[in-house]
Amino acid sequence: MEVRELTVMLGTDQPGALARFYGEVLGLRRVERFADPVFEAAGGFIRILDHSEISGPTREPARAQINLFVDDVEGEFARVLAADRSVRVHRAPERESWGGLVATLRDPDGNFVQLLEMR
Image (cartoon, rainbow, N blue to C red; front, side, top):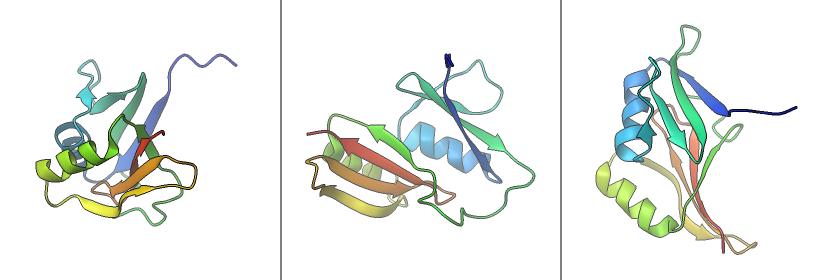
């Protein structure tokens, strides 16, 4: 199989709130050629889909996680919280046994979004 594109689709009943989080708060670049809010992340895409069969917060936020690898987890973590004090923090930046640094946030639907820094 040769994959030409990777898109993570997030179904929600509040597409505006998710679009604000991924665009304004996290600072991901919006890809304007799509009708739905779509954000670019390291060559892949996060697409926000207003889905009629989705309502309320996610029931299992750890089942699928969006991992964003960055150069400075602590700096990005501080910037995100300064951009929006209401961002829910699941886990503040913490060193892992493998040497990396990880912080876990929750988007408006409760999905886990992790900021990761390799050692």
